[in-house]
Structure formats: structure tokens, C-alpha cells
Image 1 (cartoon, chains in turn purple, brown):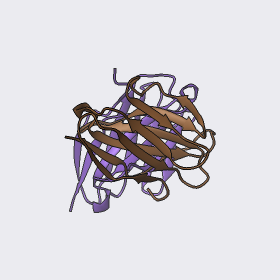
Image 2 (cartoon, one colour):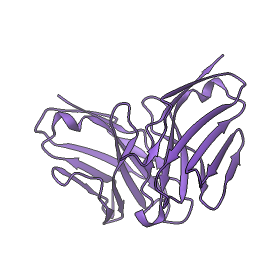
Image 3 (tube, chains in turn yellow, cyan):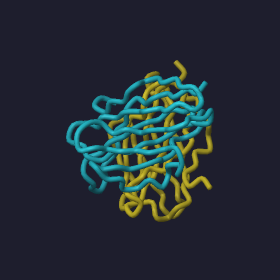
Image 4 (tube, chains in turn red, blue):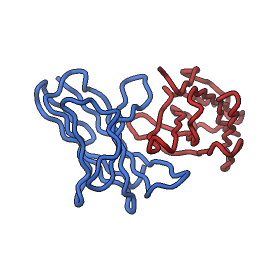
Length: 113
Length: 115
């Protein structure tokens, strides 16, 4: 039973344009959501997070949007740069589960020059 | 990924041997998490530890797997009598003492290969 789903295994975007990565979840108890970026042979790197009391959080080129009613969040990267090419993971947690992270399967983002 | 140190980066074992994976958390972090990643999948939670305590091991197989985080030294994930299905990347993460909005920071993982 996948509680966090990233339905697009890959996404290709032109350099300079906006990249939009999507994530859906099923557990309404999740109260904290994170996006991580991962390069091959490295560990995930934390990018940005959002708590369930907010619907938007912005950090430089990265913005995360949360739609609780739809159980959906998205990561916007604008403008996209070649160094953004990586696998992006969405993760979610709830306070009552000791904040263990439940992960999506990842979306591979390819930025075309 | 600076700060969370995992070793070894690669570990090769034959079936039936023991595998020991080490993780030193970031300075100031007292919470350690272990995750396993199979190819083409997301990370799967295994265990959550604080110093000298296992807080949540709901994701760890009941047999052959154990974890510890002693008062001194790194956290250890131990797999006894390894089988081919244990081949995976094992990631350790650490976080500061519990508080809302504390992201976990990851090491670069140990890639375990079972021959």
C-alpha cells in the first residue's frame, strides 16, 4: 500500500523553463512534507519542506505547494538549470509515528540545454 | 550530505556472512534513522534510534537484522547470515532533538552486494 505516490517516473524540461514535480498521498494524518534531491551514488539532499498548516513555502528557485483537500503537493523549480538534473523524492511524515519518513518512488528530472 | 558519515561506502559479502554498516550522525544530532533502498524504488524506513535506545523498529525485519546507537561511537546496522535479497543501498539519516519541522540529513549510503 503506497501512501506516497509520484506517478511520473521521469520528466524532461528545457533549461530556463519551469519544472513541476507532483506527489500524491493517501494518509490524511501526514503533517509534514519534504522534497529531497538525489544524485547517483549519493544520499538524498534536503531541498525544502512544508508543514500541513501552510499551503506554500518558497526558498529561492524552489517552491512547494500543498493542497490538503486533494492530498497533493508539488515542487516548482524556476528557472530550471542543468544542475537540477537528478531524482527528486517526495516524503511525508506524521508526528505520532516519530517522524519516520514515508517516501515516494522518485521522479527523474532531466534538464535539456 | 556533509556531516553524516557512513562507512563503508561499498560492502561485498557472501551468503551467510555478517554485514556491519556504520553511521556517524551530524554534530549535535542525537536521532538516527536507517533506510533501505532497492533499485527503482524509494527509501523504506527501517529503524529510528536515539542514544542507547531503539524508538521505532517497525520497518526492520524481525530476523537477522539489528541496530544500535551506543552512548559512544557510531550507530551500527547489523545483518546476520546475509542473503541475496539483502543487496541494497542502506542510508542513514540524522536529525536534531525532536521538534516540528526538523528535516533529516542523509549520508551517502552503503551499497551492500551479496554474492
